[in-house]
Length: 327
Ligand SMILES: NC(=O)c1ccc[n+]([C@@H]2O[C@H](COP(=O)([O-])OP(=O)(O)OC[C@H]3O[C@@H](n4cnc5c(N)ncnc54)[C@H](O)[C@@H]3O)[C@@H](O)[C@H]2O)c1
Image (cartoon, rainbow, N blue to C red; front, top):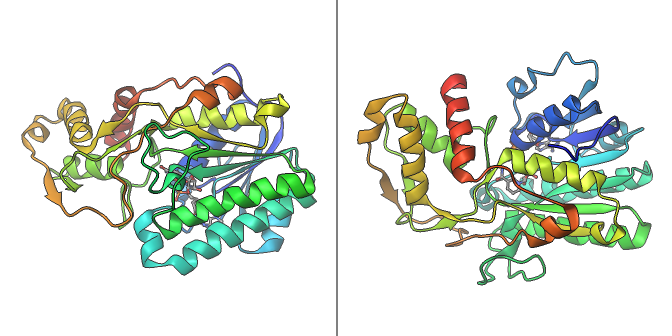
């Protein structure tokens, strides 16, 4: 990766989580001093093990719902990469109150503390769920529908707050709408695990991965390295046209769940031939799920210079291998 943020002081909220820990690692590799604010609600200490002793790294155990933790974390920071949130559509349907507290209340606290500390830019994790029931494919940033879950509402409200703060207070913001991210450090356990680590883990135990629906639903699965690249680019971009914007961050291709099952099976089957005999199980569709998702990445390409390096198969090769070594 050539265009990267270097030698700055940055804050990654949610830095013990899947995306956050990958971002921290890359920021440290490029000579940045990194503060991580995390309450370990879904994040894991093991995700920090490769850099916890790095002198450029500082961990603050705290909560974005607590304003003094936010103030403490942003002190002296140039760039904020706000990743902390409670993910998962099903979790938000089960417990909309906590999801809203963290994803909206915590977001506004981090944003306000960042503005008060005069950070250079606030880059935050937005979500493809904001497209809601809008039928168009591919998804283009300015055409969204009604959100289909409490989680999607929180992510949309984040965009509204960020845009309002940019106008009201002049803070620079960039929202990155991630599409189904996958890769190393993504949690395969628990009721709200994402589909790729769940499939890999089930294959490894010789179980039959459960596909919700008939397997024709599709997603623009996005390898973590593409997401890390987009975050660097959002920090270093200088054109004012590119700032105070929302961008899709994806690969720009869609893969059905049936295809995904096959891709993972073939890769994992190279390490364990018995996996090749496994058939999927099919269950009911999940509430709040949309049938298909595919991003247009033209805006990020044009304004940020985004150029994703891994398609879904290339990302799966790396991810499955990582899980086989680390689970
Ligand atoms: N993974 C995806 O496919 C995807 C897609 C779209 C958007 N996103 C967004 O990207 C961000 C990161 O997601 P992820 O997949 O890495 O999830 P994750 O659960 O692995 O990471 C979230 C991190 O935030 C921390 N956190 C949660 N609540 C907190 C609080 N109150 N105070 C401090 N820290 C808190 C967690 O402990 C965890 O370390 C989230 O904002 C999520 O909504 C993710």
